[in-house]
Length: 327
Ligand code: TXA
Ligand code: MG
Image 1 (cartoon, rainbow, N blue to C red):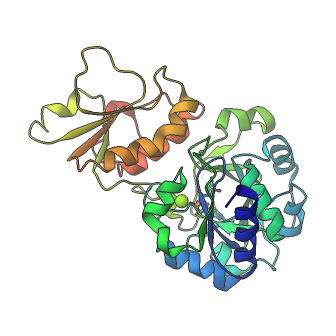
Image 2: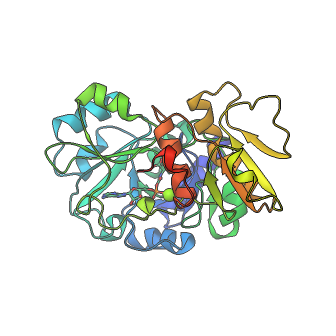
Image 3: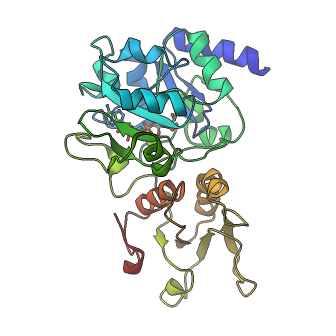
């Protein structure tokens, strides 16, 4: 099937209440018609996702935002104007038409317009917003290729649209606009610095109120099967002499580095490239039946915040070298 026919077919499936995995610029999503509660329920089933974890609603036009939320504060307008289409999700008071299952009963809804032609065409042809979490079993790493989705959810979804590897590679940045000052709920593809350069200072981190029980905020999430620790590569070697260790390096290691299982996120140490490779690299290491993955910390600026956030959660925040700090 060529792309256009596949998108056409995918839209038809969603209109009829099915679920489709599709590429976005961040990660692959598993989508259903946001106005079809039964179809949305199937997403929760397939992912084994708890019903208290709300989904992001994806739209194809900035103007669609107005149809889904009660009001749009000026800061939210500014940000969507600048970053849509793109890896920014805004949380706003929802209109009552949005089914409760999408928002886990919250009075708010998370919305974004992806920067991926296939995703946009799919939403447009479906002629309805698409509710979609990342297309992975609950708690595991998000998929950044169609192959990742096939491996883990293949026979349970009605169709997988293949748009190649996701260019950004980490999920969208989530900003909530419920209080006076905007609040960053999840770091992601748009950096905190970029956001603050447009709307000034924002609060950082979820609160009980802004995120009642969001598992994306659980200490262990976005996790591979293999235990993963964040540390300088030399440190754990003494204690794991017998075990098989894999290394997730931020940049090309020095010449003296002679180990078998090494993934380099970006030869030159560029954060953008590192983010795009992150989940694929962890998956490759996870497939090797190692005893441990040692991940090298990356600088915590720009996209580095999202990378470190995912690495900390993948590690369950265990064994983190105290000198590296932790949120
Ligand atoms: O890049 C992305 O955002 C990807 C692609 C597919 O768009 N989607 C994604 O969805 O990462 P998911 O479901 O894996 O993560 C969405 C996060 C969850 O942690 C959820 O708790 C939070 O968004 N969320 C959704 N609705 C919310 C709301 N009303 N208030 C606060 N958080 C919300
Ligand atoms: Mg997810």
